[in-house]
Length: 221
Image (tube, rainbow, N blue to C red; front, side, top):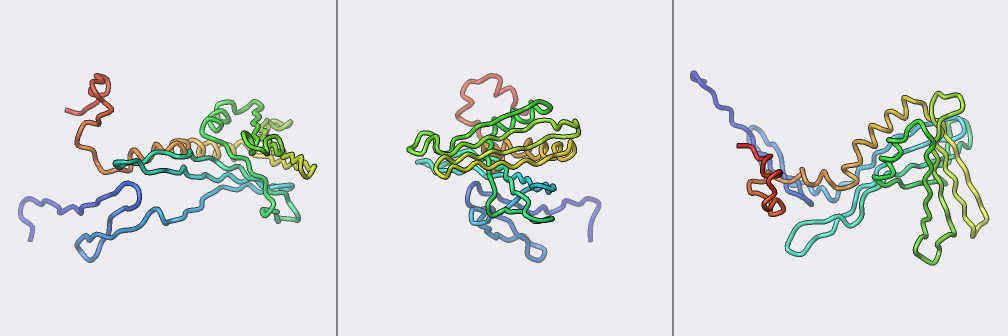
């Protein structure tokens, strides 16, 4: 029976950086249950289906490497895949032969900042290697002639097969607004910034702060 005051018993939740997250509930008491986050595969994406083709955007997470003495560092930043599939019949699209363009965080920022004007991005998948110049990819985003949205277009040129492939998909202002929100949300994750806030609470001043007065000024009393 409760008295005049009541102090709730709050469950303890622990979170381990990197490979494990620890939490669980059994009956009225909390127990330690380990879920290996690293082994989980989550596939997310957003697709737009139009008459002559379909457009999809899909985030690819960054990869990490372990540091000597503990800790992790980014090995490769994440990217946003922009994928195109040509229509082969009514409401049927050739995703097996899709064309893909990978945008990094800076390119996503450029695309969002310059919305309303023509944007063009060029990639050479073989740059720096023996196959440099063999395959070239161009992504164009430009306003539609009617002014009611944008055209997302991809061109892939393969000199080895003498083949040029082009797909263009119209995107309405509303669809582009949703895409921008997805891009804006994903950029910190592509750069790995979310990992800095997924760790347990930090009770000691980070060594990186040093004598930084501005950083120390942000400490709560």
